[in-house]
Image (cartoon, rainbow, N blue to C red):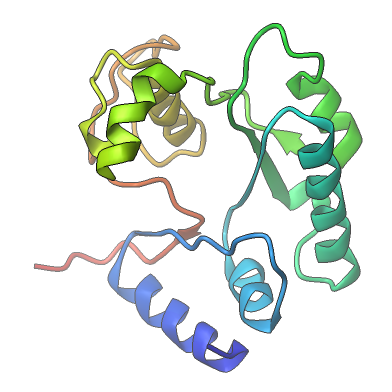
Length: 174
């Protein structure tokens, strides 16, 4: 897939869907660059370890050098987070010069294992800390609505769609 194709595909998807998710991976090429450049919101996932945080910092710098995305326009999502890790979100924010999402995805391998093995993440139990964190992230990004007084662990109302990086036009499709 080349840059031109990506631009056409993303434009078509944006016109048809309210939320579009594009996983650009860790490699950089012209197609990925075009998708990142077109995104309304760009999320960069990292785990709280030195190697991953350094890689995130390099990616943010690369995007900035290529004039694809500025650091302040990128949101870092911390995945596999635990409270006792030495590298916490505020440190990641300082290192990468980006905003780190308030909601982190916890490292709860036990509750994830069966859903990951089956390839059915949507089957996570509603009380799952990982599922609640994903809904919290969707709420933070403005993709779902929270009830009035929206407590951190409250259930979300509205469409249970996926978290995405592109917001399309709000057209109604049957």
